[in-house]
Length: 305
Ligand code: NAP
Image 1 (tube, rainbow, N blue to C red):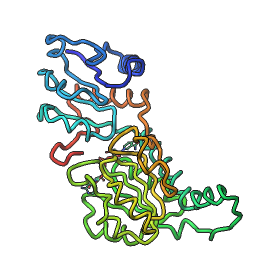
Image 2 (image 1 turned 180 degrees about the vertical axis):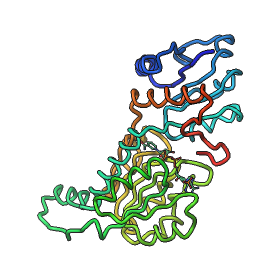
Image 3 (image 1 turned 60 degrees about the vertical axis):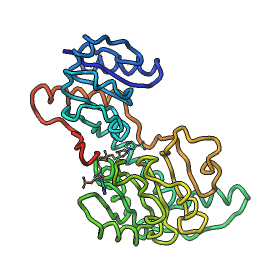
Image 4 (image 1 turned 135 degrees about the vertical axis):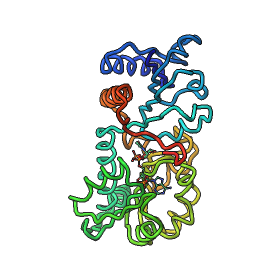
């Protein structure tokens, strides 16, 4: 039985990642399509598939598959492939380094919004010397949508800075969401993209936010409805939007988001997988799987995360 690596990165990145996986896991790993050819016998021999955006349909051609390990935290793209055998356990990446990276990105942008850096940048562009009111973190409640690995790490870094935190998760219920919407000055989306959360950042959600709230979307592009966010910004209901993820990536040249003065665009970099750390987490999960111990990050297919 073998371990296969399947990704759709460019060939050089794929080769580099494969070398890291081989070195850290300490076993031969075969490269699957599109970068490597696996005949039917080789496909049948795959026991564990380590994947980063694999080609749709390929996992269904591995009858001996016992575990699918994603190198990404979000599995919405993977689950869109309806051919993946439902009985095969699928694990998403749970990597403390990824959560740390996300927490740092959240703090960076929350601080920038809280200390009004976009407004000072606009003033600098027209050489205006004007002090804005100095806010304090204690007066700036931050709402976190999604209290999983990412949300909890962000809260752990935000709290010591003095920001009151309002959180919402699936188990937290509608009251927690209503309170977050009414009170948060900055709302950070760290939800997984599922049937329930798709297009949640739309007019009905935005209309319930505190006037002048700012929005940070570090989840997925499928969470947001861009025309609704632009309308809320133009109406002053939203003061700023930091968007890292988009339904089409790279963000097309003609997107109005690029040039909107109240939008900050980053190219899906809030938290990037560190290849060595992800390989270590993968090695630990493979060892757990083979020893019959619990595998970290098992996805509930019915819930979609
Ligand atoms: P996770 O550990 O699975 O946590 C997901 C959280 O979302 C849980 O608290 C869950 O609630 C909540 N949730 C799920 N469905 C919900 C719903 N319908 N209503 C309310 N809450 C809901 O996931 P994670 O590791 O924190 O990652 C979250 C997402 O971050 C990923 O799926 C990915 O899309 C995104 N991400 C983005 C980047 C980037 O660079 N932009 C990098 C990494 C990850 P319960 O606690 O009640 O289950």
